[in-house]
Length: 254
Length: 386
Image 1: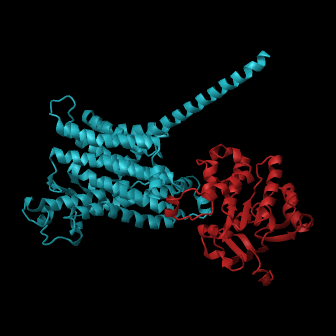
Image 2: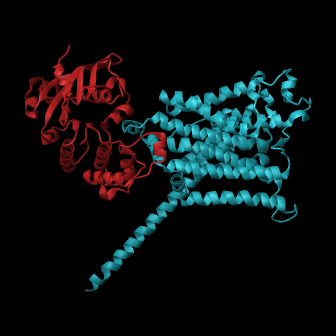
Image 3: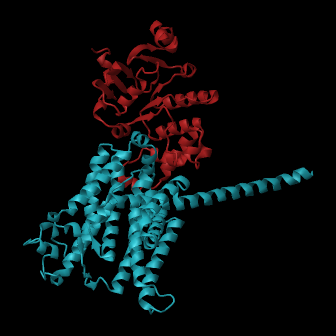
């Protein structure tokens, strides 16, 4: 059952078609299909248990689907690769709970994330070059952490940890960024700032944001995909999606 | 490349400990050999051997710290690598006995003659040469760790499950080495050594040389371990310890990272075992006892996990305590050791060195805060006067 026009595949950055996976009989994803175009910023919404995190697990290689196709840049079959390989291909992932290296400084966190040779021996004899330094400085100012560079990540506030993690993803130089609930637990000011940051990032790469905060999604002003029970319920602008009767029943109305 | 690796390794604390170890390696043998027994500064030979043994334990604890302290792999089987290194050295020492054994067989060690074996098993070939035995003392533990780690880390065995299978590994080796037909002397192990590299193993000179070799091996391993943990690779190891999935999603192959640390650590443990055996004069399957590996964990925890210097301090202190305690109250040593582990876990979770570092940092911060405050008060004063 191909729900998508297959001519979307060659030009897309991410292409999911008929992806299903079940855990102990529970269908987490049920023939999920959608396409992300290069340079697109897409928001994904949906009630708890809709399969948003499972979808990210499948794209990043943590979970293998039972059925369906997952292609990156039209030709790379992601279901055949593991997490490290997919990360090296240029897909970055931000977790729901901010996950940074707490016992390293902000600077070291970014240094580790830099897109350099990741083998044992090249990291053993790695020396920080002027280019790498400049790149880290640049990211520090993008994520507004320049004055905290020597602090341990454990001592950052919740919002700053979220930004540091986004900074680490930038250092990875991905072509596609998957961001899971970036503004959960943030203040209103931080939320607005994060929306600006994500829009800035989306200028040079594709970004998929999973979020519950409708205000934040309105701030982003992008195409929205609503998931429920493991498949796509509605897709379009925020006004279009929030007017959809099934979306109201499944998600907004609750 | 190598020089920058070493320069990074040498921070102030490491330089102090390395210098101390090298000074001890020179001074103690000199005081043992060059002074007469009634001289006040004379170091008796039994002390030289005792501390030589402690240094090999310290090296084993340092090896464990590399994987446990920095990568979060709690190996409860590190004594197995130590014992394998010890057996490699023991095999060389057995072949050095030659025709001086009780049965006078120039080729076969006594236990083989006793078992009515007619020829040397293939895996004993080459052990008449010191360089070969020394190489095997490093390679065999390294290879075992590589193969074991390859399967364990690739299957993503983590945490307590990994600890249990390391324990099973050392227990399996214990049972195997107990068997006479394994060809390693069975229950009795290898002993009655005579010479090492042509020098009598009992002489003061040899004992001093072994002591110095142990101290130098410890110093070199400390530099290597410090270089590893201070490199970018070392920071990734800590990343694996604290947030394994983040490291993976950054594109690092976590299993390769763990495998390298585990293999290097096993090789260090093998060197420790090879230096241990000539100093105690025996190696038997008892060294594979799972309890031995657990003791190494206690030394490391007492000294301070993840500090490199801590495990060295811990191994020497706990074993020094053991030597004194087992002489005074032999029945109570295990209670004391268990109690020590509970106390350290409850009250000194960072160990001796970790806690000391914590206090020094806190004091520095306090002083800095006070200085800042004084400077601010000083700056504010003239305005108040106006």
